[in-house]
Image (tube, rainbow, N blue to C red):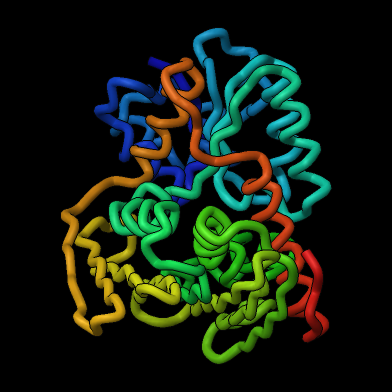
Length: 330
């Protein structure tokens, strides 16, 4: 078992604490937040001490790892500090906002012999694991196209000055917090991205970069993709992969935070659709526990450095394209 500190106690940080509450692989032993006074009730409820000083936390011998659920622009400095103190690191997505930054983070963690986990829990959902195996086995034939949408209304409930909607922390609008999960899945199944073109719009929320973003994608393989993220609509999740032999589509009943069933629909050349339903699973816990297994030498972590760098590079290119309206090479 690894003893970890949760750094950042917004709605997602608290969700992560709850996800691993009864895990036999990871135990949250400390909490830290910029304003601990706002989280004393949560600290008392969980029976976990809370501190405000991240640097002091890193000097705590009980803490073996840190889980960073903090603003994206802080990740690099926090990761480098954790490495200096020999702590294992799990970092929420996006790992960084620039390719240069994530390359530096990975170089330092790799040199120190540490494994940096990443909060792309959607890879652990049963539908996506099944589709990934189908793609890897060649069941879909030649990979043609992938398209997806991950939208919800969570951002309608956050304060207007919340960092998650700021220009600095969300330069690619909803792609930064939502769509980046989908591009991670795209890269894991279709390989590296060559270029992107994106557009955004502001319809309901007063977010600097808008509440709608859509992206066209060209893969180095020659395949194409399309992804959309809307920050002010009831939850909607769809992911469809097209091959020349078959297509496969994943649909969700609810946001992964809430659980619920997921559904897989496939259709081959005979035109007959087949459906399969998967019961509720906690992908956040599955990701964290696999990371611990990798740290302790029981398995390989499923995210490669190339994929982690590639997804941040795609996000950076999307942000540039949103501002210019032009195709941007990754």
